[in-house]
Length: 108
Image (cartoon, rainbow, N blue to C red; front, side, top):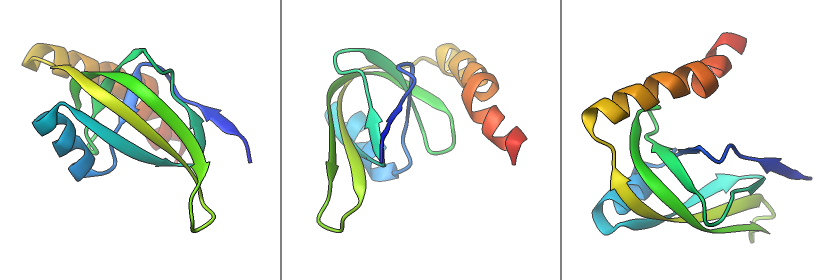
């Protein structure tokens, strides 16, 4: 048991519905496994499950808890600041692939 620190510039969705809610309603809550620390009040780049940059979000709450099934989870609430334009999305996607997502594939 312990807290894992997240990069304050990356917020990756693994659930399409949570991403849809963000884009449709301007806010969402994302559930992550394990205890994690998300920097409340800071902005981050949101990524689709396919690692594509899509928007800038502001983290409004980060709640770590043990759910009724005994699993350690973190609920991250966020507001949509704005969607990225095509060029911004392309550049952020390429940078994140090199800095974060590509590393995981290289280690496999």
